[in-house]
Length: 86
Image 1 (tube, helix red, strand yellow):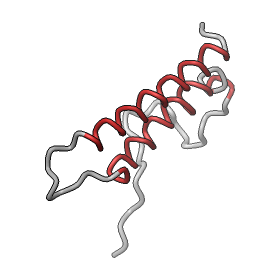
Image 2 (cartoon, rainbow, N blue to C red):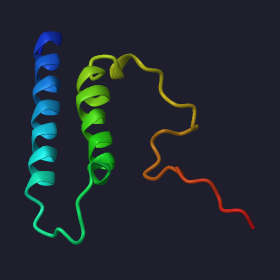
Image 3 (cartoon, helix red, strand yellow):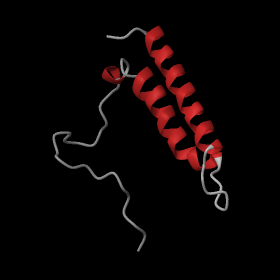
């Protein structure tokens, strides 16, 4: 099991490498008529923050969280999307 310090170092390195990748991608984008923007990486940045934050940092705490009150948690499928408006 990784220590908190190792997880923090991993998260910092992952974020640093992603930032370097974004800078490289922006600097080397071949289509000048259709420029690549840093906002094009917003969704990727959100995913990276979930990996480096919630999944990595809170992995130890996930076992302690109460189970959701959905009734029978042994179901194969669970409704996660609300019904559309009529």
